View 1: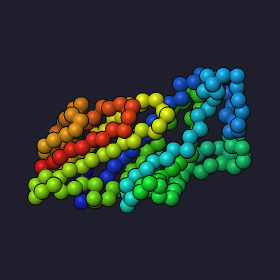
View 2: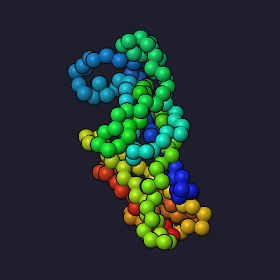
View 3: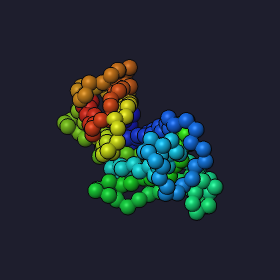
Length: 186
């Protein structure tokens, strides 16, 4: 929020596959005797990010998946696709593969619509971030950092920040249900 006329966001999604030794990654339907055995395989994901309409993708770090790992034999390029609007949100998506014992970070640099910062009166502004939890998934850590514009102070925050350092306001939350961060600045 450093520039209220051109607010930006960086979304970082970290995937860590805790399995030990999954062998070859075969992208095919098959079943093992137990679900725990199937969890030891490679992790395939079509990561979808839902953003406000009018949000522009500035940069991203999508991942290449080699054709030798795919049924088609054709590589999946490192790209972010723009999906059709769903439930009033724009969709950005990328395909990824995380092998057993590996970690992967996917970044999305976004230019937000100016409307994400709402004037309350002549001197106060409100920003609200809603992070929706995917149903059926376990709780995961959620870290939010806001950079306030120079000379602007935080008047109100819900929830309370975990730390404040000058213009940087940080939240350490758990995404066990949808989370909303609301700040009022002056």
